[in-house]
Every structure is written in C-alpha cells, then in structure tokens.
Length: 239
Image 1: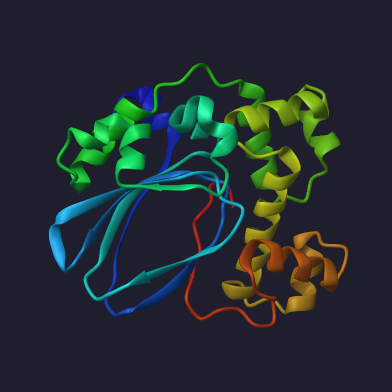
Image 2: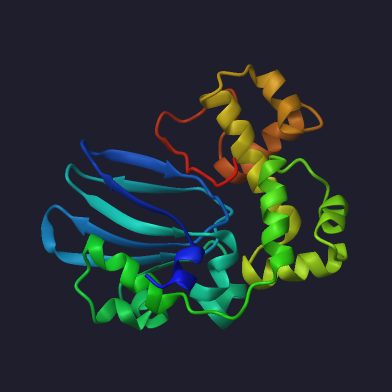
C-alpha cells in the first residue's frame, strides 16, 4: 500500500461466522471495501463497497461465511466515491456495481493479501484540507459533544466552510457526523462501560433521556433499554 493510501485506511478487519444468524451493523459514517465469501460457493467472491452510513442494516449469514475488508477513514470517502459521493450516503454496491466504481476489483484475485493493493489503486485523491482532519480529531476526542460553531473556531474556519469540507470529503454534514460519534460513544458507555442509561445520557451529552432515545432510534433502530443481542460495534479512532 502506498503511504497516501495507508493514511486513508483506518482499520483492516475480518469476520467468520461460527453459527448461522443475523447481525445488526451500526452506521459509523465510514466507507468499507469488502470481499465476501459464501461457504456454499467458496470460489465465488463478492466485492462490496459501502457508502458513508447513517442507518443500521442487518446481515444474514451461515456457518463459515466470511468477510474481510478495509474500513476507510471518514475523510477518505471522496477518494473512493469521487464525484458520486453526494449519492453515496447509505448506499451499498455489490458485484458488478462495486466493480464499476473500483475497476481494480475485476482484475485481481480477491484474497486478504490483495486488499492493501486494492486500496492503493482505489484511493488516489486530491489533497485533504488539514482543517478537516484537525476537526475530526477534535470531534472524536470530545465524543461528539462539541458544538459545531466551537469546532469551526478550533479548525480556524467558519461553520459554513467546515460543513462544506465535511460534505465534500465524508459525504455527511458536520452535525450528522457529530451525532454519529455521540451515539457510538454513548452506546459504548452502556454496553462496555456498564454505565446506567440515565447517567450515560448525561455523560454522552444528550439533553435528557428522551433526546438520547431519539438518537438511538434514528441510528440504531432500537431504544437504549432494549439493545439487540447481536450488535456489530465498530472501533472508531480517538474514541
């Protein structure tokens, strides 16, 4: 992988199903390049590309079904989708549609070792404004609790220009992206930190329990008091 492509990749991941079932994949505002292998047809590999997600979706699998992929940094969405970024939100491309976006997927053997090479071919993009990367770091460090106006001051630009930077590179507005970060941090407080729901709402920066519940319904499709048993929780940087 080229140094430029390496800077655009946040994580390399894989998943092998050890039992049949379903899993809820939560939105994190990022894009993934994924290869899926079905146990019933191990020689048939399905390329999948996701756009920046704001809605949860359900994945059904059988024993031995396998996924491996690259999760891109949020500002790398433009490198993958280029001029189609404005239409990429909550979009999933599979098979030939994914190949049409990244032609390199058609000319390589889809194996785990090739993902880095694919990233190098797929992620060439213009310079990314350092004000955006600085704002993203601050946003994650704050757990999404910082106001957009204050974030813009830290990034040394106007809120309007910061929003253009977010939309032009991540595909999402500043406020929506911040709300996703806030949702994930609060969900982690509840699931991993074992923080009581009422305390998690306060620590997460929500005005009250009802405010938190609306956010959980919007991004997860569930309420804080009734979390689904099989959630896929992404590890977001600086979280």
